[in-house]
Image (cartoon, rainbow, N blue to C red; front, side):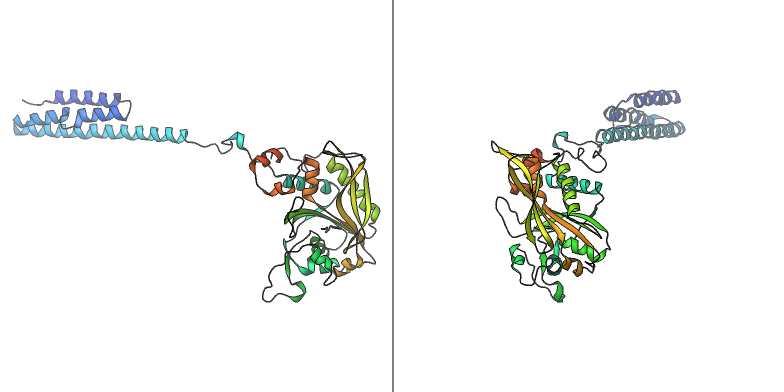
Length: 365
Ligand code: PHE
């Protein structure tokens, strides 16, 4: 038996054709076994070399080896392109479009406190107020002393203060540290650092040791402060009326100012808004009932003095209210404690669509 060139050429054409015809990795492997396997076509011809004379055997052997390499290279090439195509298919199949919510039915909601804070800020910003904040961990001086609470005055305990343990090297004037019981210390921080005219609002967390249907140890307040040379009580009333009517979306909202007491304002008042209670429901607006919503007053001269502002030149007003309270009133939320229970069913119900929130850009008027 012998192997001639024509035979090798013919085999090459056949094997190349079967490699080219392979449509996937499996049929390519079959083509490989058929060509290069132990019982493959090339091996078959190799076996026939034994009977040939040495020169012809050498030439045919070289030609067969060359053919073997050539077919192996074709197979490797094809295998590489199959693998690349498979990888590409997998990558495009697994591509994640990060611009789409994977579960549209589970979009997040904006907490009613955040919503209310944003509404408040946008109303006051439209009136020319600037937004300020201050630390939750305050000191006795900013939270009480500078606000004209006399030393040892029961008002300090009245607020159910959380006192922090004393630390080494604490400056006597600022000791002890407290969790701020109201946002009024931000009045002090602002007046100590800025020259009038001042027109600021603050919203933030406040803390008092209390827990029942209407009290949680952490809650939120809104604080306002205006200081200028001629700012008077009429400005205070006008400003609060504008806020309440815009926030509650009620025109000619009945409001009354009742005399009250805060150490840091004189005179001081508490403000009630009109409402009606029918069939267990509460409606803000003209009615036969009143609802207390905030405390306010003219900034006490001692407070101005404590911050280095001359009360013979400057005067102004301040107000403070509970964010939860006005959120509950506007959105009909019955229990204060539910704000902080992180129950997703509650958040689904009372939360707000993140894409549909009033802000400075969308507010009308
Ligand atoms: N800080 C007062 C409180 O927490 C509210 C208030 C603020 C009253 C500003 C008057 C002026 O009760």
